[in-house]
Length: 325
Image 1 (spheres, helix red, strand yellow):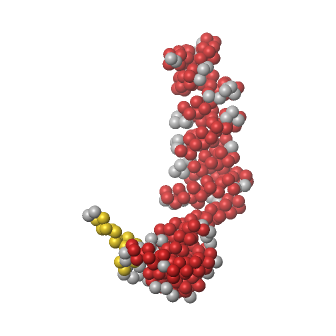
Image 2 (cartoon, rainbow, N blue to C red):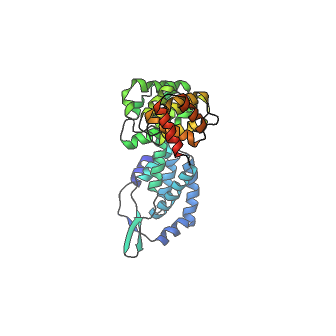
Image 3 (tube, rainbow, N blue to C red):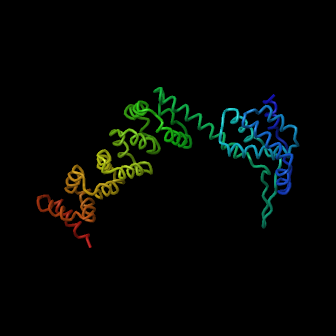
């Protein structure tokens, strides 16, 4: 019976034009408001057989006014189950029975008088994402989640699944995270992920050096930059300092990584040794020397330059010194 009622509610019909005033009046009418209160209870119970039967007793205009307010109630409550999702999907697929013509200065627009379809569709998508997230977590915990397969699809699908993965990652066990990390060393398909979201968050969740090495080798995006900033905030924690040093292999991230290291007061011993070595490089040495000078380490630079026979280091020191006011 419910199926018959839902199918019959989807039968196409020529839309009838009504005014904005009629829409407001019918929505505020006592009969519609009483029916909304009664059917809200049925919606909450997921009793859609009774709900659709009650709706069928109203005029079509009243039905549409009630459907709009029921969908709005569904949005406000936010509680979904499969029966609610099925009913909302039916609402999303309904063709407008009534339209309103909007007049303007030199234009005329016809629109649905009761525009609940998009809201219903959004809730259905939300429910689908909930189910997908539950499935993902179950597969990850059982060790059956193959990321390269799960992430297959067009860019929109990949983006949706990436976002779901990032939302659910904090809930995964250490064992599940470890199993997912091993896939990046055994599955070459994962090298072609469109962004660094999953890699950066797995690295942050696990502290795994190999995941960080992969992250710093990839093209910089918002996710790798965000992880670098998170590490900078964690410094001088030893693991954070180690990864800030490692991040300097990335051409786009190295200025921020060096700055994050050099602004640490005092400089950790391993960072000091690392920077001293970099001063003797042509490519990064001048950048490091300049940043050290700006942070007040000019005396240390002078000591290193005086004690070294390296022309590169001495040139980098002179260049940094010349930039000072």
